[in-house]
Length: 477
Image (cartoon, rainbow, N blue to C red; front, side, top):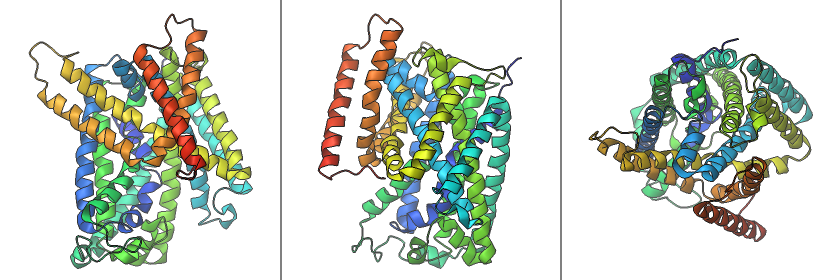
């Protein structure tokens, strides 16, 4: 049976569907709690420049290196060698499937708005329900990536429509006087003091660090695309669509309720904003939107979490067993292993929630280094002129690569303690990489610079463990 390929609309839906999860519904409170309208505008402007450059770099790499089918992982490997590439794949995979455990819990926490029996999403009723959803998604993906992507497209369209309804209501209710009141936050108080403008801007960018995770979605499934050129288009269009939604949701909310009221709302705070505009049904409408949005994100990230180890196995970076597919060309073994781990950790949340939260804290930031490595590879290509024609201009691409790399550094810096914790995840990857290289009979396992990177990871892990022991760093996010 020939494999059905993904068209442009399906790729765009994967990018948007993976970026828009549950976080967008909490943006109004997240921003208002620590930043004024003016700081929010500056923060979004800075973020927009960084993310657009990053998206353009993905488009550039897709065009210059069409032979790389693993996207964000392949770029790390091509630019900086097997060990770095393996660690990028290792961290991305762990972060993706542990994130899906979180999505499953969040899904049933949102359902408790209509069915209180589900509580906070981590009682036995929720875990049973989440397990059923997990294996339904598993069965869907086994039927083929195309079929799963089609369902994701439907869910993405519906959740975008929910957000557009909110935006339309907020436009009508928007009052410029509310938006401009204390525009630079001179009168606001955060933890007993009035924060400087830089502090406010930084706090907004700490939030925006996470809402764009998933921008690389089209590159992860690049081998499934009907047209190679659609990957870059989907990345740019998906980013611009999400950026517009995030901007409108956060900025319009600041003109509906005053900052103090907005900052005091419980999450998902979008429910409180819409309720203030249209009445009690608005909160229920947003709650339904959260459910659909998280369900779509769960499906999109299931595809990514199975696809990346599948591609890495085809490249010889993961054990060959991950490369096996079924008659529908779905990554069968990678999917079973990934969802088996998700099921295990769903059960862990029931009996030992703190253990899961600790591991999630460790894995959360592990998804960020591949962004930095992709941008750095784009910069490296442009500086060296690899894959360019003689005399072809490279100034634009060098500038893109430089800005994207600096923004990638910012993303890792903004993750703070979580970035330190992620070293505890990358460190055991050293031994997994060594074992795999030995198993396939590689003549050389570590090059000198890779040994230096491995030693640095071990050192960071030791420092992190010492900080945890002394209470300077916590395992609970």
